[in-house]
Length: 67
Image (cartoon, rainbow, N blue to C red; front, top):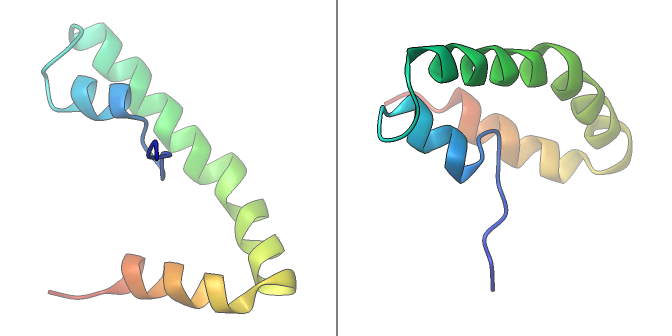
């Protein structure tokens, strides 16, 4: 089964790790990810809170996990 992305695509990961692209591409990918967090994630969280709170709990566990 193919893996789906979470917040980053596989390409995003490679660019941000410096394996692909140049500094300009890294800057663009960083902006794209920040936009997803600021513009898309709040709506996704609201949907999960209202319709699938168990999934939101899993998300919070992963994001808020302290090491």
